[in-house]
Image (cartoon, rainbow, N blue to C red; front, side, top):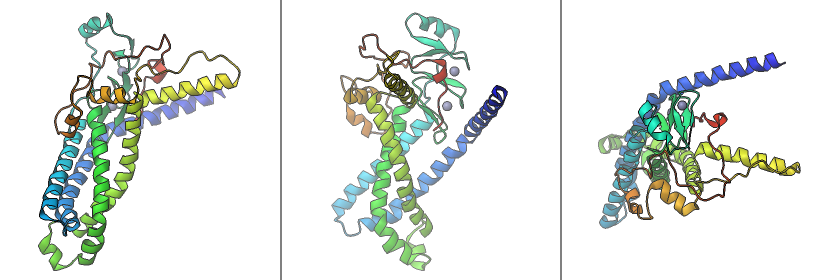
Length: 323
Ligand SMILES: [Zn+2]
Ligand SMILES: [Zn+2]
């Protein structure tokens, strides 16, 4: 029986390794696919949907809407570009850095890459590296979401969800009054560069992607409000479950599930985006400019939990998920 279980575990482990390798190798394709959709869909929106939706508006409204939509497209592309290109924050493995770190940083040694992990760092199976404040590995940006790029990632999802909602609302009339009745006509080919199917695809993708990314963006934002990463949320849930089980069985729980990084939603938001409280003004999040992280990823502000802290750094939690 035990031999059988070991064999099943080994097979599952191989499947896991294979899926990690596939995710790692196909990341570039995911990014290429995302860009190949984003650019023509944006073009199609400005060429077909936008003019149709505002055909009966005043010139001033049209101008203001054009400025708004251009800004919205700019922040989407900027944040996606940054999420893909800014390093999530690799844990340094050089001996000098480790020696310098050991004096004041809490850490454990990674069994996979031998890096000395600071608190909140986790090993990514796909990248084979330990990442500072690791959240998850995302194939759509072909790298991890960590301390370095997490703000861009969340902003990208929020801006994209809002854009999908706008395209969904504005595109309804354009698709049914303009695109479908005029598809294939000479008038269409003379007026537009976008093929009719692409205008329809833009609208349909806005509905589909808007629903999926909207839910994911809301989820990520709720984690930001709680001062948790995705990995920590799973750990926290497991701890809470264990505490509840102990209480149900009439036992005194061995620990208390407290998140030491939770300062309340407003301060958690402020720390995540590095805004407010003497830091940068929140309006910088509206601009396509770099947003540096709050802190170096090796030490984090922690509230006084009087010795009660959720332990995040055990080896069993060291491997992050791929989302
Ligand atoms: Zn590692
Ligand atoms: Zn990764």
